[in-house]
Image (cartoon, rainbow over all chains, first blue to last red; front, side, top):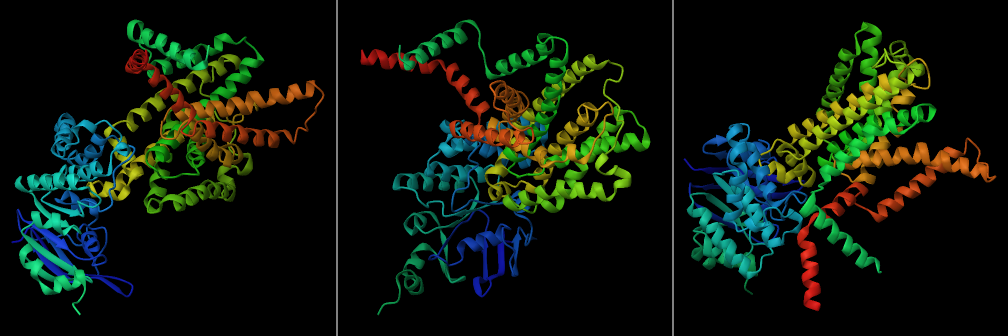
Length: 243
Length: 377
């Protein structure tokens, strides 16, 4: 059984087919990359999987359990967590409270334990991404690179089985990109399954073992980074046809 | 001596005081203000001015509870309500109706009135919380208006524009002045308790989730949080305290110029009761919880003490303003003052004061200043 399985997913916006009959699977402990030019439907695919949009047809299975059409918060609690392409911090809250909000969903299960350990746990999450110095600073004072890492810390606080990362390198400078690659590698080594949507092919190719290529809402190629780089179709999509 | 140096010296002296002798946190300041208001009835001579001042302060205290509950809902959770008078009205009419038709004592009818407030909050919450921002604001604005229409339509039960009369007082045994003093202390205690509860809640982990909904609803959902549940919670708590204020209003303030206590739609559900919490919160500092209290006091100070005195003074120097024109002139002047205050302190007066005190408390700041001075020679 695959950890996450997407079967024949389709989403239309009026006449536009944003995601067209997409099927793929993610295995436990995998690091999957999804690439594609602007408007290929990558973010729509993420929105469908995490419940922000309802698919017109198709199924999403997490450990064999059908999660299609569930609200986003339930999907997040089941262990399928996402980050956003454009950072969405809670600007009025201190950095540590941003992580505490994500830890809140444990409260119902083990309340007393939660109150005792939540702050320490949130601090550990921040240390993992190198933000512990900024813990009490309001999130609005953080730089873009810090906010990107805060998104990761917030997602990891939910103890996810699968993390869907929407352009984790977007808007980062080379140093920050390098740091982010290391953070993601460490998270992966800790046994988390990652799915990464990305534009920066260079950064992505270093990281992943298997890549899907999307174009006009469809998956046009699949393979290792080396295979993808040589794939004619993919090169055509990115650079245009040779005359 | 230039102003800059005076400020620096004052800061230095203050820091010396707080670090060596006694620490004065904002909490201490709040306590001192509370002590001042507790002693207030003994500072004013027994008589008509005392009654006037206390009756204004009693209704200001109750209005402040409403404003604080508004601030939890709007300033902390981001659900815009332009019709908070609804809860005031539900609380007041709830307790009044129960008294009139069942004759129960007020210590039963007031809690039931509060429960009615929570009930109404949940009933309107389920459908309305699907709306956001301006749409929710428009809808909440319409609610008190439609309730007023409802009260008139079922006039046989609700007593039409004359309302429900002969309500019992909270302290029936006391004579006029003593009753005012007792009512004043009760309202002050209620305000203190309610605002402390709401403040504790707003700064708790649950309050943290409220703020995360205000900041970014989608991201809150991504954190696995049932946003609707927390929104309903915020609305219900806000409704609970709003209707508490309304219920006590019915037994303390309503028709207090009249020997018979009564609630009627024009006293309970006017637009003013929805607007004062908003003005107060913006004036004092939205989202601070303590700001709206300062805002309500400022509002009542201007409306009930400052403007009548100004018109009296004008009359004394020979400028007579028509009685019917006075409220309108006062309103324009009041709005102008508010605009000026907000331009000067856009994040609220109370917040500015607290931040000023927090700045003063920072001993490092003085050290840094001294270091800079030493470096400059």
